[in-house]
Amino acid sequence: MISPPVYLDNLATTAVDPRVVEAILPFFTHQYGNAGSKTHAFGWAAMEAVDRARSQVASLIGATSKEICFTSGATEANDLAIKGVAQAYGAKGNHIITCVTEHKAVLDPCARLARQGFEVTYLATDSYGVVDLDQLRDAIGERTVLVSIMAANNEIGTLQPLQEIGAIVKEKDVLWHCDGAQALAKIPLDVNALGIDLLSFSGHKIYAPKGIGGLYIRRRGKRVRLQAQLEGGGQEGGWRAGTLNVPGAVGLGAACEIASSEMAQEATRLTALRQQLYQQINAHLVGVCLNGHPVNRLPGCLHLSFAGVDGAKVLIALKDVALSAGAACTSGSNVVSYVLEALGLERDLAFSSLRFGLGRFTTSEEIKYVSDRVIETVKQERV
Ligand SMILES: *Cc1c(COP(=O)(O)O)cnc(C)c1O
Image (cartoon, rainbow, N blue to C red):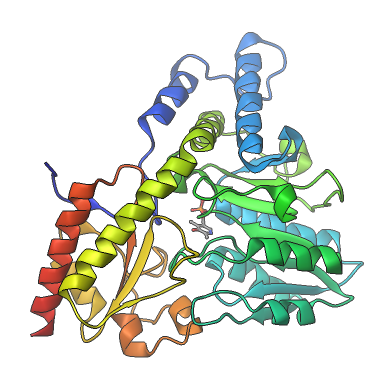
C-alpha cells in the first residue's frame, strides 16, 4: 500500500529519521543548556552531548573530534573552507582550482574571491561529469592554495575519482577541500585514506535536521590554517563563533552513527531500487537517456532525459510525485542547468530531464508506482 504523494526528492532534503528525532528531543525540553555554560549541570550536559556528537561524526569519516567544526550547513562549511583558506594562505598564493559542475555553495565563494583578486581555474568534466585529472594536474602551480572538488554531484549523482584526486594533491602538496554534502553517509569517505584536508557536510541530506552541518579541518599530518568567517565569541575552537545548535549537533551525530552501521546495506538496497526504476521506465519508453556516470554514481540518484518532452510540464503533470528537474536552488527557473551544460547535453534534452532522488524510506512499491506514472505522463506529453 502506498499513499501518494510519493517523495523522490531526497537529494534536495531528507526526512529526519525517527531515531534521530528521538535523540534530539531531550535537548529541546529538559537538557536545554548552552554548551558554552561551564558553571552548571545544564551546560555540562549540553557539552557532553556535543562531544559525543562530534565523535560520532568524526568516526564516520576517520577523523578525530578536534577536527570537526559544526556549522549551520554545508553552504556555510563551503564558504568557511574556501574563504578561510584563501585568507589564511594569502602569503603563499592567490590561485584556487575548482570544477564547473560544483554546487553554487562552492562556485559563489570562488567568484567572490575572484572579484577580490584571486585567480580561479574552473576544470572541465567529461560527458559523465567526471573531472579531467590531467587538467587538474596541469593547473596546480606554485601559487595554488586550494583545490575544491566535490565527492558526489547533487544533480546527476556522479562520483568524482576521489582516490586519484587525493594522489594528485598529495604529489603537488596543495590543500584539498571536498564538498561531501551528497556523499557523506551514502558512500565510504575516509579523510585519511583519500587525503582530504577539508570536508563539508550537511545534516538535512542525511536524515538529520536542517540548519546543522559541519566542516572537517585536518589537524593530523599537515595542520590546516583557517581564517574564521563568523566572528564573535570564539566558539568551535575559534573557527566559527555563535551559540552552538545543540539539538542539531546531537541529530547530526546520531545520523552519522546510524550511517556507520547501515550505509553499506542501504547502498545495496538503493542501487537495486534505482535499477528497478530505470529498467521499468526503459522497458516502456524509447528515447530515455541516463545522465551522469552509469556506474560511479550515488546509489539513490537517477537522472534521466526524455527526448521530445518538456521536463517542467512532466513535473506539473506528475503532481503526486515529488521530483525535481535538478538542483533545488535553481528549480523553477527557465535556464538550462549549468551542470547538464557542462556534460555537453544539448539544450532540448537538458530541458527534458528529471532527477529521481531515492532515500532510506523509499519502497519498492513506490518505485513501481512512480515508474508507471512517469511512463504514462511522458507518453501523454509526447502525443
Ligand atoms: C545541499 C548541498 C549543499 C548545501 O547544503 P546546506 O546544508 O543546505 O547548506 C552544498 N553542496 C552540495 C553538493 C549539496 O548537495
